[in-house]
Amino acid sequence: MGDALIAELIERLEPARTAVSDPLTRMATGVTLFLGFLAVAPGQARLAAHAIAALPNVGRAVQWRLRDDLAGAQSLGQLRVGSVELAVGLVIGLSEQAARMFGSGRIEASAIPDIVRAILRAVGCTPDEASDVADIAARNAEEFSRAEAT
Image (cartoon, rainbow, N blue to C red):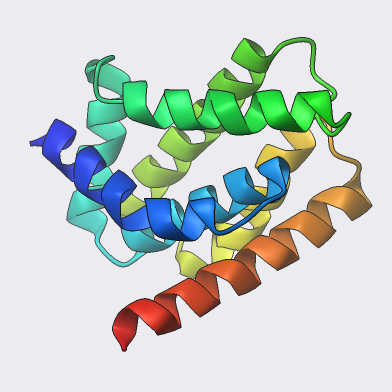
């Protein structure tokens, strides 16, 4: 079930993610959308968090896309951690923790920009860069959600 949930979310996110050309903003947009879906569905958030932690194959498609985006960001000098693999682990770990917190009701959707900024800071963005990219990602996610609703 967790595998099916993650596959469905990836399929729903892909059009919005690929519409963004900058790799760091693309990653942040994908994370923003992913967390947005989980924030409104605590049961799915719990399932996603469990699937990410317990089923390594579940995250393969996510990791492939993250790796691609983060490698692109690294080639542009936007990624300041030692390796793309470390950056992938940081993004997945922070996203998994956020999913757990959404699932238990400890945080609400209003925390998403803070989570995305924390992820961006973890991969090496300055506070200003993290804020700017998170703001763009939030706008991208909002536009995609509006378009998807129509």
